[in-house]
Length: 75
Image (cartoon, rainbow, N blue to C red; front, side, top):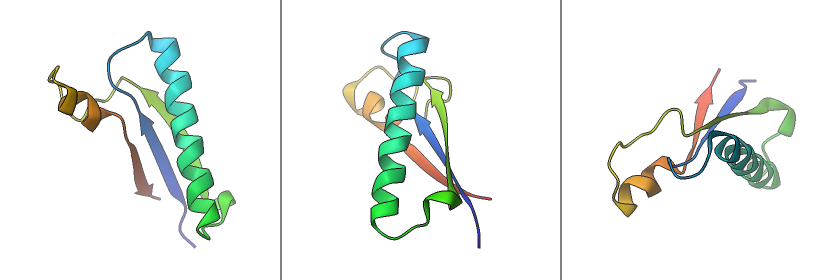
């Protein structure tokens, strides 16, 4: 069985500490949802990245929205 890394991200607004905590909560919420849909929780691990790896570098609301995400990475 493959394991899945849940890479959790935020937009750039807020402090580094706040965004790390927020990305952890975001990743945990996705993990819980995936678990409720039948994925074994022990196969998923959350890594909070905060604002450190933006998908978009713009400052429009749609750029911020792209950065608020959780990526599923199979391992």
